Length: 207
Image (cartoon, rainbow, N blue to C red; front, side):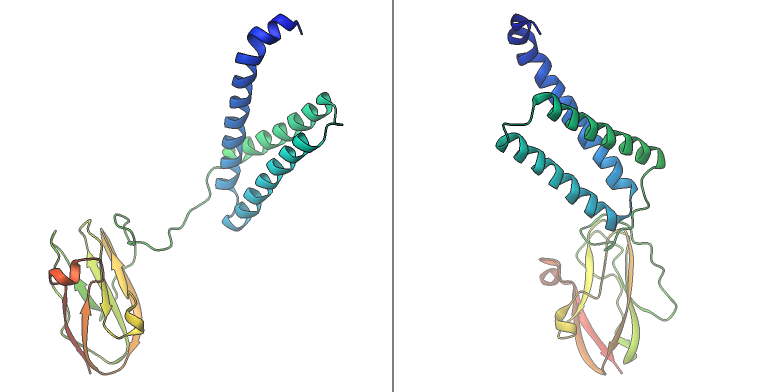
């Protein structure tokens, strides 16, 4: 390569653009693979890719005995393999992704149906209130639910039950959960910051 061309064109222009293109191609290919393979496998693929990058960086930094052409061939072969795998993964498409905690964090619609006989807390207004809530319920095994079509997240906590854990929580949908509770009088409330103080609480008796 002409030294003048290397100094004026290749080093300041061609090399950075080539490196940037390689990084983008690497990221695209890896992302297609991670989205196509099962979730458990995607973790192993990501760890393997990170390890590969670290090994290459270590070799380049520590070893001065590897010839530049040999190193270039190794990088090109690895990149071609990754791009090929990415192209195959892209043709397969994205795997089906399941959302774990629907309703948590706001805005995600839950897909659960409320079964007959469930104790349902409702919040149909853009306000910090339960528009409807049960006053009594059967002790023992019972299903509780929240029906909240608004975009504001609300939940139901029974004070002193299961260490005040959130039983059901939703925004733009519903959430359902089975519980086993002893007979007695309980206080329920919404644990989202400020909601209980605004009035989202009440009393329920299990008998």
